Image 1 (tube, helix red, strand yellow):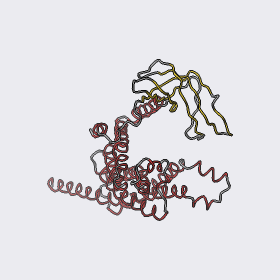
Image 2 (cartoon, rainbow, N blue to C red; image 1 turned 180 degrees about the vertical axis):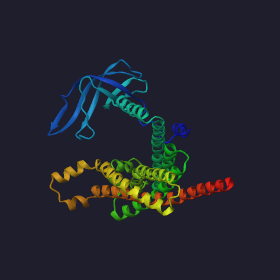
Image 3 (tube, rainbow, N blue to C red; image 1 turned 90 degrees about the vertical axis):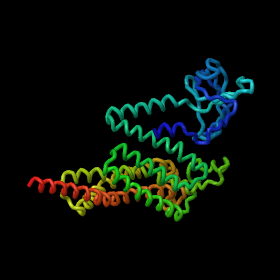
Image 4 (cartoon, one colour; image 1 turned 45 degrees about the horizontal axis):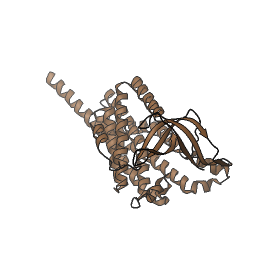
Length: 372
């Protein structure tokens, strides 16, 4: 029901940017590179593509489209005969085709195939748990796209919004995975406390590092697009928490589930023993989780490290640059949040499960007395 509501509610940013325009799928018949000039690796100019439109109001028509090359490898693309392209058609007020712009290669069908493969394998190998995982995945994605991003654009406090969204996603995910059980409640409580601590760390160390939010890719474009009032630095700091919140809830439920199993096998276990066992379980999991988080973050700045190393930049200079410092902040605040959630969840479980086990023992003793 929540997913359906999220699908239906408007974000407030549905305005049509391109008037009298239509996005279509097209097949490239031939190309003309005579207007392109090269300077080393850089290509600039116009690639003229003869295309056949495959859908939309001009389906079946053959037209010429322009692929503008700006000299930036990260955004430029080259087409060849047989490629499928995503094309923007500009129309006159009378509905006649005026101009065709080659936007990019058409990838939507491959994206659907990849998502379908993921969903199919998940359901086959995980069964009902896989279905719940898909529901959680869809809910999380919609929360980000329909609530988090629009609220940031509307000027709400980024850290507060991130914390609320993160806790909401964690709660839904943990209940879908573990049901309405004590292990889910303990994991939720541990996640909430660790989330609060992680948000504080992100703000404190973000300010100490003096990292401006413009370090995020494309973020500066928002300022030039009329959103000068948004705080890019707070958005960057909120992203630090949100990016590690999944790992935090994962670790919390791992510890909570292990302690539940421990208490069920040994109801007479003391609160201190539960706490010590929870901490020992957390030690093993934290080690692997922090390494996983480090590797995940390193993938985003590996090219930058290669550039610095290729230029012979000293290691201390590399570590002190704004971009690398921001990634260090991102990584170690997230890892610290993982370290924090382990003892917090263990402490919560030691109280919750000990209280539960004491009640069970009292009931058993009461039954024995009645029988006597």
